[in-house]
Length: 538
Image 1: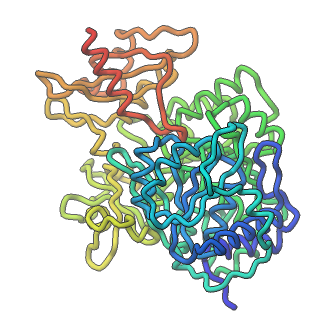
Image 2: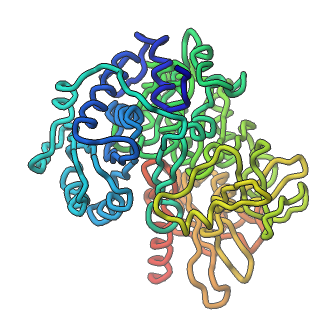
Image 3: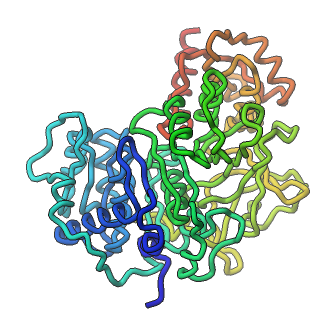
């Protein structure tokens, strides 16, 4: 039978050649490829016995651990759709998300049982809930079953049929504003867009037939430390890219990001690649390494994505670890991995990050025509080729984001950009987060990158607050480096060296810690609230 690009079939190909290799490390638990596959088979058989089948949605309300990868693989084996659940959501938000995604099954860590029960109360078609035990001791609703007991009672055999390249992968995203959305991809498209395309070393190019995948599995796969929570797509994509190359996925313990633990795992597990999310992870990692170096000789690259990795932080990474490449990826839940910057340094300009893009990425003007290189015109980033089907049950938003031009289907994720003379693309941020001050548009990420180059700044978010004269004024919410004081005049003077005057912050709010999502993405709503509180107090 001809192999397909169904993600579980691709994984099974690798299992059949990798067998006893370590596939997954999570705390003190280590699973080989055979063991991971058998556990996913058991889970799939249990779900099938509960009536879960093709097209059904299974919520994964979990922190990091083997159960997350097992849950995804089990769903794929059944042609069902795993749905990533943000574990920071409370019952009201969960009720919206569970209902919006029409969940028929749920796998949940015990510590989240109470909120999950509140979220699930309106689900008429919920057929099964499995509880992954933890040290919380939380009460579990009657009728919910033990994850491990369910697996123990189910068959480990791999006997699934009918899987196709057109089966669906879902990635729920909260976006920059509004309620969550479910981005729906064909398996084949997400495999090529975000999971390596069967090219684990990124040297040979994507495979042309699904059967080629096993030919690309090296004698020793890459060992990858995945630091973001698996509820975020960057962690999905990195983990499956490693697994499709016969590599080892090393997960950080559930909970907050600890740079000391990350470095210990890099040393102990011989990690070749550390997957991080922007400044929020890179800066403390480098601070920790300089304070207490470890043997990082195995490390070949940092792979960052999902949030700004500023030129100043890239420079510090390169200086601290000159033999380690810094790969700064650009993409979104709607585009997959769209471009990279491996320079590891600033390009001398402070007007947005520059990424090399492939032929499937362009910048379109208001008439949806490509912008010519070197014009400095700002348009909308667009991507074609392997892109999503659209948003689940949201035809209006799908029509806004996915457009057809001259018979070619494009996704417009909301990023504004311009095209450099050499064809590379300079990102300026998202229009929804931009600040309008005196009729001029200011992109927070641009100002943040400039401020991160100041020695006293550990982390920063930039927002706009109402201003009677200018409409909005630019405010920086700054977390100082340990032992450093942030001087407003000095920070303004520094900013003026890199930015036009209207982009320079009119106020600075100093905080103990900048709040970000667990994956390092900025919480602009929190920053704006802090800025408004400061304005009212002043």
